[in-house]
Image 1: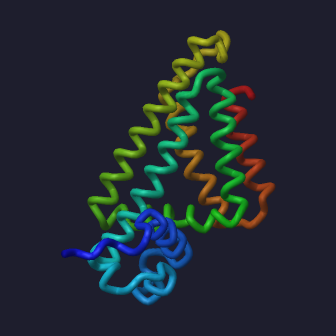
Image 2: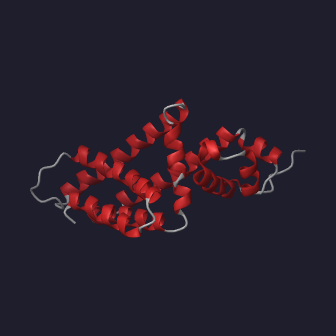
Length: 194
């Protein structure tokens, strides 16, 4: 009879996000993982496979969680402009606190894109999913009259907003000044006339 796992696999993925975020993929040793995750080597291999498999699982978990939260905000009833503002303000707030270390896993993953077809395909799919969600929300916003008579390429704006979210994580990595994140968010939101 197989033994059941004695650890929470979702919690382990969250811890792995922090570890990979802190050390980067290349800099994370097996010992870093074992110490930080608090599980035995065999449990790690049995549940997640190799270091790369754990990394890919952690990246997908992180990105899917963040993407679902963004899409949920974009699809909520009411003002689309306010929803987009909330996305950026919440993103900047997270990056200013201790959880920003989790966000650094994104940098490690993006570094792997040129060398790892699975990660590259995953990010391409996620990028398209988010651009489509922003676009649908912007179309709804226009229909609700939030843009007035202003003509704008909504697909280009959707791409800009999505890539700006990624840019915030880069700024958080380069500076510990929370005002930089707030300033960047304020400028991004001027594209919506907020």
